[in-house]
Amino acid sequence: AWVYTFGLSPDGQRVAFAADAPESSVMEVYVMDLNGATPVAVTDATHLGLGHDVGLNPSWAIQWRPDGQRLAVLADWPINSMSVERAWGVWMLGTTGTVTQTMLCGDMDSTEHDVWQARFGLDSARIFFRGDLASDAEFELYVTDDLGTAQQPPASLLWIDAPTNGDVDGFLVSFFSH
Image (tube, rainbow, N blue to C red):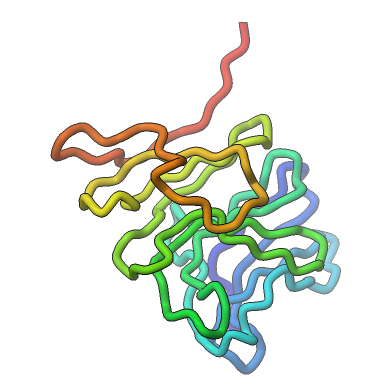
């Protein structure tokens, strides 16, 4: 098995990582304590019968919500076994071994409109993501505070539109205190 992308929990006690599922080419996400405990699967994409990556680009690292209760990954998993391969979307995952995979946003009907970056707000209440979801070949910035509803339409989550003939090339979530 190969270990691909990973992310350390905010408290530094756990690691989440993507790896080949046993005897499968499907990338699953696992969480384990750093004390060497057995990894626990928090996804179940193997039953879909398709093998695809969970973020191989370093900017697609597994993101922990600041409170440590959820994970965000960018994946091209199908919604169900009847779906075809799709573009990369934002998926929310649990951290405890109970499989709760929810695709928050992505293009359901295309393999060309991808989400390329996702970050939680420091308050754990929102997730920001960057991608080309508007069918205009430009990257925009999106945000949602609904971290439980699946398949949210990208148009309703648009936060910052790219300048004409431009792209949002990256972003940083920060907090300033006075």
